[in-house]
Image (cartoon, rainbow, N blue to C red):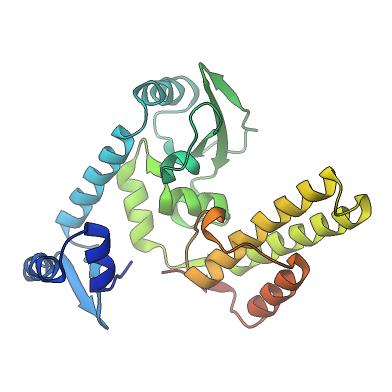
Length: 255
């Protein structure tokens, strides 16, 4: 992903001059490239891969120690050695509430068609999501995309990095599927009554589905539903997203 100088300065909490000096050093070493006024890492450079790997290790170490141990147990006990496991969702985004938030765990492996089941490990509730290995190379569902782009790899970090380097588009067909699902939820909410607890729940799930589609269309990536502006009219938002998708090709370009 490419960033403006001001964005990098704000994230690094330093001055423009200091940031620019560092960027120039990275550019002279071939680690960073400047294109159309934005700075982006050279994904083909060995240093980029190494720094990304170190970042993932650092992110993993930020998780509670008992959660790290729990994930190690689950990885060794429940999955084949060549499985690519990724923690995603609220724990990967730093938005989890200990004792309340489930631990979302994406597993990319050959026999991923086995039905995943919730795991209770100590004080943690682990919600596995199983994906075929093909989704590691070309994600076809928003959960898989979110795991690869925003998650913390527990195993096969090299495969996740290679996937991100090659990742360019996301299938339009799945976004249409998500909109159809949101439409069904809104129809059911109107039947049970929008103001009832059941109706409010159905509308909340529909709102999250719409946020998934909007994040990919408007940001070219998955963002947390909390980061997407709340929808004032779900039916209007649904129509607008259908109109946006109608003019897109079969693949949505990602950033």
